[in-house]
Length: 377
Ligand SMILES: [Zn+2]
Figure: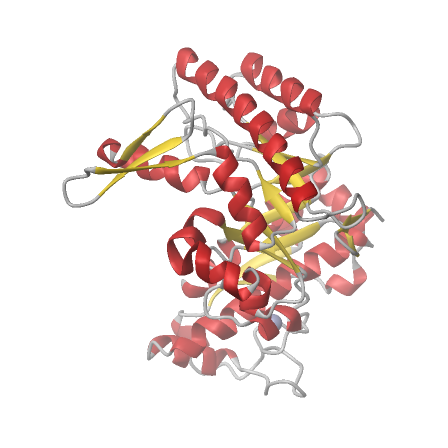
């Protein structure tokens, strides 16, 4: 089993982080996250810079102290959100070689520049354990000229981020043993000449982890496995790879066998809010990595993973637990919370009670951590 040391703790790989963009995995508290076996969360630097803001975070001693979270935190640079914002509404700002320029104020008269150095400095204030360099997201369908510009900028920003990272480590007295890790995302969309250039240039600078930058979907909105495989192959064999924003349990299992060890996604909690629950068709205790590898290679993972739509009328009178193969507080562990029947959860969703979102999220997240446990076996 592969392991990684992050600051002073060792974690088994692969590892899944739920998205806690604003410092909260929606509807769940820190204890909830621990109960379902989560060890890390992904927060967003740009969002937390807006609220609660740099000064408050500094006074509180970072996001983990604020959340009272004993696990580790990875922080997204904020690049993806900024570029989505600007792509949707070009009047909001623009990307320059210096950084991302944002216009605010009623007449957009105020300008703020968010640089790769700002992003790193802010991630130190967050007290993040796995930091991500600001990158220039390559939009799908971009022209070659735009792809080249995005790759060149991503590399130059990563170089600047690493210099700022080293400066902060010295200033804050970190040693080689207790320092946070730094990740650089690889850009270039599916233009492999530029994606290869990006990966090589980033490896020359040297980072702890390499990220799957970009949008891993085909034009028909299908998950693009060959894109993910080719991206993994661009980094040295022993590299640590983070499949940023991925994915469903099936996506994660397949990408693990391609060489990715880190995953973060909004899917389990978002699907929970949309009444879509993940269930195992087979007892996960009876499965190991080899078994999943066989099924993944044969495209037979649907024999293991299934969904259940708790809003369906057939569940209104179903007294059974969501899954007999799940040991989450909702399905089984009466010591922490009474088991919740499908009928009760169906009812809670029907009346729109906030507890439904929490219970469904806990269950879905446990399916993800159970999947990690199988892959570690
Ligand atoms: Zn459960």
